[in-house]
Image (tube, rainbow, N blue to C red; front, side):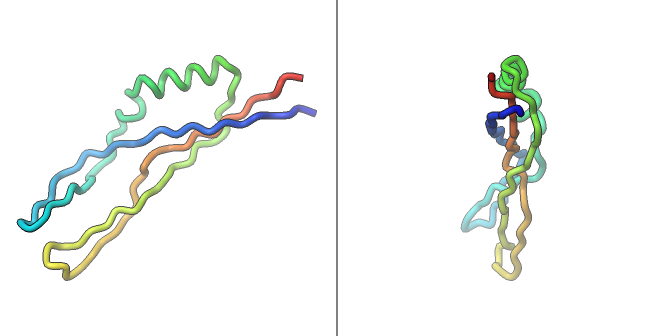
Length: 97
């Protein structure tokens, strides 16, 4: 019976955004993900190639979510939503006998 070892990697996602200024304070509001922060990332490409070369098999990918929240400048109402902060990559490979 085969025995396995496991490893986890993480790659963050960056966002495009805009500054929201209410006079007394300002907030940076993320508006859309920047997909290039993953697939144009040289470290990501290097890591994927290295893991494959070393015999690791990618078995699962899971997003890490974080909450984003705010309110209008008067404080009358609030809002909240989730953003993908990055992705966990789960790997396995067979241990040598």
